[in-house]
Structures are given as C-alpha cells and as structure tokens.
Length: 440
Image (cartoon, rainbow, N blue to C red; front, side, top):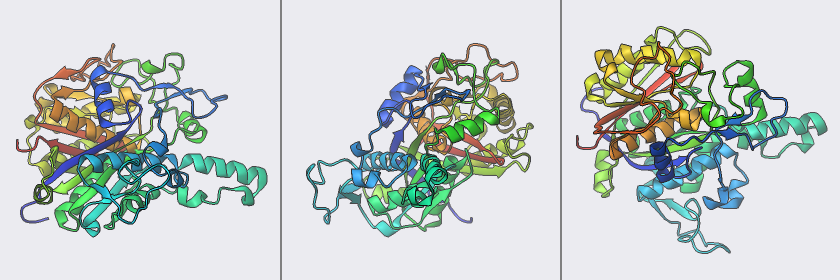
C-alpha cells in the first residue's frame, strides 16, 4: 500500500461474554477480577472428564432481536447480532426502519435493538467482517443425532444455513441492512483478530466507509469438549473449583477452559466518523498477521511467528515498542502457549517487555475461540479509555519461564496511550491488533 494510510477509528463496542452481556458489565467484571467460569449447564456432562466452561449467562435472544429471527440462528449468530446491536447503538447508527410496521410488542422505537432498526447512511458503504472458528456445533450435534437415530427426514430443516460459519455475518447484514462486502474470517483462535485486520484494510483501501467487525463463537457442546479433551488441551483438575481453572502463566496450569461469546467493534474512516459527528472511542492503528509454518496445534516454540506479528502490527501503527503500555495476551493457560508467548513478547518488545503490563483476560472469560479476538480488543480499548490494566487472576505461583509483569490477581491503574492484543490459532495463525488513544 502506498501513500498516506487512512486513519481508522472505533465508534462503537458490543460484548456478549461469560463476564457480562454488555460492555459496561464486561468492564466492571474486568476491574473486579471476576471469573465467569462455572459448571457446564448447557448439556449433561456425564462421561466427560471436563465439567466446566465459560458460559454466557442469562442470554435471552428475544431481549435483543425478533424471536422469529432468533429461531433461525445458531447461538454464535445470536451472539453476533446482539453484540452488533450494542455497538451500532453506541455509535449512533441505528434508526427506525420505515418499512417495519411494529408488532404486538410495540413500535420499532420500543422493540429490542436488533428489531425494526436499520443502519443510518449508505448501506452499500457498510461492510461486515466477523471471525468464527467452528460454526453452529449445537445444530450439527442435534442433526447428527437425529440422522443416526431416525434418518434424514427427522433432521432440522435449517441445519445447513444455521450451522455454517458465515451465517453470523449474513444475519448481521440482513437484520441491519448492511449491503457492503460481508466476510467471515476462519483462522481458528486468531479469527477475531484477523477479522479486525481485514476490516482495517477494507477501510484503508476506500472500498467501504465503515465495517462491523469482530468475532463470535458458541461451541460449548459435548462434541467440542470431547475433542479438546482428547487433545489433552483442557483443564481437568478444577471441576470442583471452576473459577480457579484458567491459570495463565501459572506454574500449576493444566490447560485452557473453553468459553463463548462475541465482541464487535464499529470501525470507520476518521473522515466518515468526524463528518457525522460521531464520538471516537479510540484509533485502530495497526495490524500484523503471520503464520508459523510449524505445527497444526502447537505454536513455534521459538516465538518467531507471533513475535513477527507483533512487530508488524507496531510498524503498521507507526509505534515504537516503548510507546505501548499494555498487551492483552492470548494467554490460554496451556503449558506450551504461555511460555512461547512470553518469548514472543520479548522478541517483539525487547528490553521494554520487562516494563510492559501484560495480562490474560482469558483467566476470567475462558478461551472464547474466535470470540476472543473481538472481546480482547474491547478490553484494550477499555484499558485506554479507563486507565486500567485488567488482571490475570489465579496467578499465585508464576512459572519461572514466564518472568514478565502479568498484572497478577488485581487490577492496576495508569496512563495508557497504546495497547495491543494478540491471538494465536491452530494451524500456526497469528494475529495482532494495536489501538491508540485518539488524538494522542
């Protein structure tokens, strides 16, 4: 890309997470160091070694959207629509759909955010990029059960359109009337971060003025728990004390905890946001993406791949390492990831790595797969705006090989003008995003 890059800013945030179903709830939980990990309630865990997960709690789709629309969506799509509705509302981009007559619940103004509303402005200039790693596993599971037990005629009629990963972007497009490109990024656990990077490039290229971007995931089902369990990737030692199970950078960590949720950001060109008088929350300054070319499930133990992604993101943002105060780590609580990620950070930040505040909010949310990239980007923006360094909880006995400042157990406060977040995915995918205080 040549010439001066368009500045891209953030004007809206939306979060559905194990520690809050709004951005405000999520923020307060980060400050409190609240765990969202508990016993699994979404299905019967009999026969599984893993009994815990970071479930989204008290989520009623009809609080956010038309119940008739919700019935046609898998849980991951519902999360995306709810988070997008929050973000669009904060950005001041929702208006009454003049073609919507209302229903028995009331007029469009009094209905849930994602019902009877459309996006203000030119819908052809609004894009969507959402990360999703796995798709609608609950529908896949149920349809396979019915296929094997009773034959194909008993399968759910909407099995295919509900389960496929692109349907979150498709549903957000249809409900809010966004008619620009609608993409789905699938790079496993890096999907959310990579989706944000793709959205950044879309706006810089001039193809669109605005993108609804982030990640969403809902795969807490027996199939995925069983699969990760067979990989020996999940924590199995804390079924009786779930809140202590996710222990990034701790010497006694024993695996990650599966989570779910969605984080969605409204990204706009600076010119577009200023022209419509939007409140600018932060600048989305840079992105870096790399591949390890090493192993299907393990990161390159040298830290080279992820470290290069951080360096590329900082270069894209026009920042020196010492100009970043906070790094939201992938921090999965697995034996290999946490040591490797520590090497990545040292590789990219050099001596500044020892002055940098680093934390894994997965200690509270669990690993939300593609949802993590969006949720953790929101944590970065909140850190800048609120002057908070979210803690890494359960860090009582640090691994000697993880010797940086991971903000153990309690929130810290300070001035933050730049923050970065990294996500690593199976297949060796690495995505890093950088946000700056607007006007800094």
